[in-house]
Length: 560
Image 1 (tube, rainbow, N blue to C red):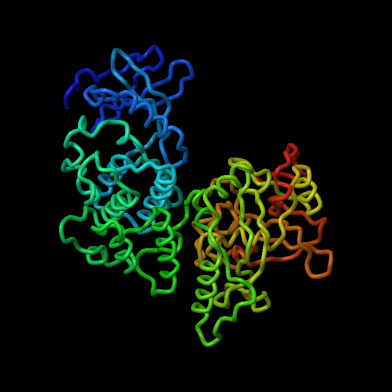
Image 2: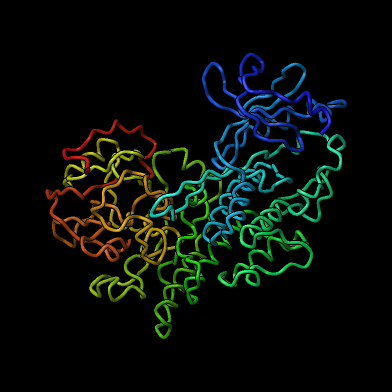
């Protein structure tokens, strides 16, 4: 690499009297990257020192600054943020967010070295999060054009027996970096042997303008490599030819992602996410395979979960054909519900999220309330109301149970009266049972918040197991609401029939499989309280603009 010696720094070197070098993170086409500590604040950042020859020529510096500022404006939890451009001893460097992680390449190499294969769930979790972040960049007019495992950062957390539960946080680095330099200065390094498997066929180098479909091709290559242990080259085998445990729809996903003609690929990253979601809805109807697929969408970020929502089967349509099997009836209604509601625009979604960042926005519309046709036997009582279409206006709901702060214990031993007062003190109210159920079922109208199959590892095995808010990272509904299946019971503001007893959602002692279902409910007297009875608050959209009062603790106790 030309100019390599000028870009070499050692531990303890001070840059611009602001940053102290701690470690060398890696080299790339554009230069060298170091971990550094901001001396004044102690905060860690990544410093990317740019190869000097990339800034040769008239206007190169201005091009860098303009493109850097464009990239700096784009914010998403799945994108590494840019900080500032600065100089040190004649060398230009970029300050970026430091994300403690491994590259996806390192994670892949570890799996390969230990002869492990990524599960379909793990591979799709990674790919979905990458697509979510790319969509934000594409909406801002930024195409990566150099996406590969080295540019995807992964932080992995394991929990459960033997570390069986895996939750990964993903960030893409270097989005917009290609646009910061003149293609002539970069030369032919773009199509090096390392990069070319991820390069869309229509791109011949950094000078190619590119489109969102170019990044989708790269994602398709990464998905194939995660599942098959190698990149697709030439006439490659389909994933199901390489691995017998994969369902057939994976071949369809890869085929569309890797189409040589960009017009045949997914139009947007969001469309590929939708197809993954639809594919797994269909998978639930097929014979079970070796890989458990029911929890494939767990860990999706709240932003995309809201953007990906679709609404619901509209009341007044013809009833489902009773000659169909129970599963087929359920899937038909849910597909019709999914298809017949328009998606909110990205602008609306971002506005609603910004208005109440401590809460989750649930769009108005209909949903499939009550027990599904396939919920029978040990799963549900025949006395429960059968699936029907219910309309709910849009609303906000607390992401966690009261006090709605991750890391704290849920407030227990609270009567309905005290819970209602605590919500009122914040300018909120108790959720209705319909609102609670819709938020739990998510846009897919699932039986449990995470899918249709009971899984004690997702949200705990019973309602009386102690937990901290947000501690079970996979226990999240499709809308992004936490701990709604397997947590403590929760008060609602809905009375039972014409009486004075109030409906309680969220759990049943002795039968967690039944009680954790989103449709399950019991009723209690308003002044009743016990240690595993808690609540969360909702807020109507027309009152969400007011500033809520500080949240006082209701009379009761945190459940140890």
